[in-house]
Image (cartoon, rainbow, N blue to C red; front, side):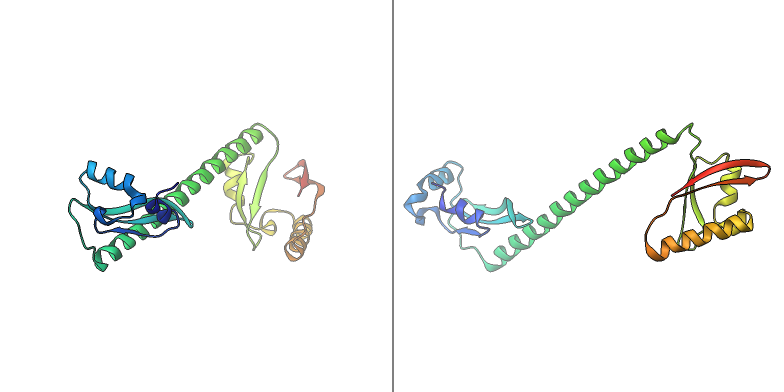
Length: 193
């Protein structure tokens, strides 16, 4: 049988004992323990996390004590701070795990594309290039960042890309198309998604 004071803590209730001399005989083991560690009175409040008791916080005294409302409120408040600290620590740990997973995923992505002919880029809602991975050279990368297709491609091709990208943004439905581009005397083949 679970002792009454533990059952109350498990139900997220506070335990207030002014004197172990006055407790229920069913709690004789607790009274015996209290005498062995020279504790005759205790006030304990549960510490919760996400609605579950994860610990307890309390005061004890080696003589019978009439606990005050102030002492009870202080313990409840500190237990609340502990709950916030535990929750924040858990969230911080979760965030760090997500960040590490993202770093690992990005590293795998970079390794997969290294030494491949694949060039990847991203554009913002104004269709300006904001990111480019695996550019042919750093000068080309610096040239396109911040620019639109109309600023870097022949007009006919830029118009085609602009129409497709606007349709994708308007509908939210992706598209895939292939095209070859002759630029500065070189033909390249693009598979665009």
